[in-house]
Length: 214
Image 1: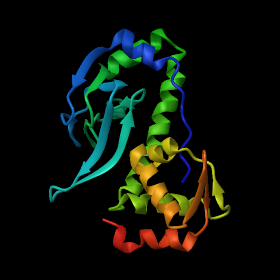
Image 2 (image 1 turned 90 degrees about the vertical axis):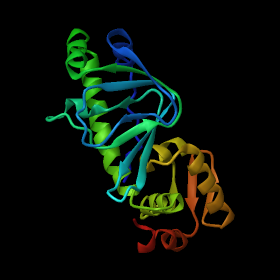
Image 3 (image 1 turned 135 degrees about the horizontal axis):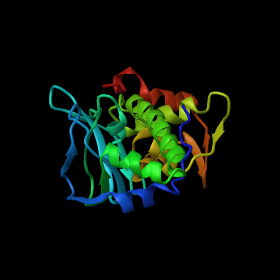
């Protein structure tokens, strides 16, 4: 499940800064809830957003953390425009917001931004599928073990940065770093910059058995 490719944004940030309006959120503040009408899409200028699922029993399951320089709330382009996850501010946030009509009018006036926007939407669909998959695990070590195990079926070494792994699994970069350190100490992997060599695939597999699923 390799969805680590990045879609560079050359035109979209300027589009939001030109046509959008500033929205600020304090750490812990709700941005939107699942199933609510989607009125705005956001460009995250600074800070970090947490996307999560809220279960009927009141428990939460974090899907991912969205870092600055990304879009949040692409459901405005759906029909009907309804939120598919919950989101809150993991840190203080500065974002630029637009409704769907303004977004598409801005793209019409700046045609070079439209293919970029479509590519961003497609990448988010791929990542959302991945986040939902990894959200099944109750522990971060299960997420990371499954990621490494599934990506070394035909090769022993993989070339991913901690930022790329975090983007796919929904973990924070710090959590990825801590888990990799634990795996190294347990002899499960060897690691150099941007490269991870799996030394014990059965050991990784033992970390995400059925007991680790929600």
